[in-house]
Length: 61
Image (cartoon, rainbow, N blue to C red; front, side, top):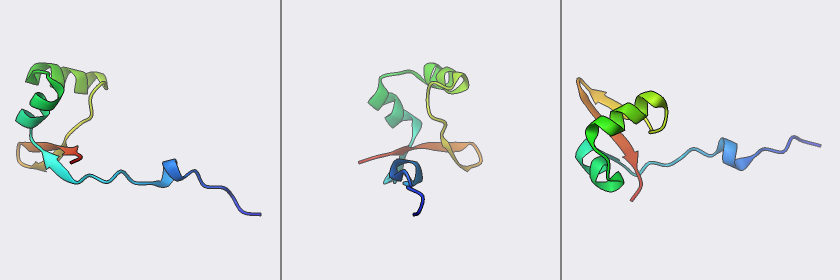
């Protein structure tokens, strides 16, 4: 009678903390240039703007 809802499409991804570039580099084993190049190519997630020039990525613990 009702529409079926795909739970995967409606669930929000819960981010438990934000991590800065040095930790991202350590976790993924990539350099800064590669991370930013991959972001521009759509191969790497974009960071969250914290204010000014500060950015961070959503991380899970």
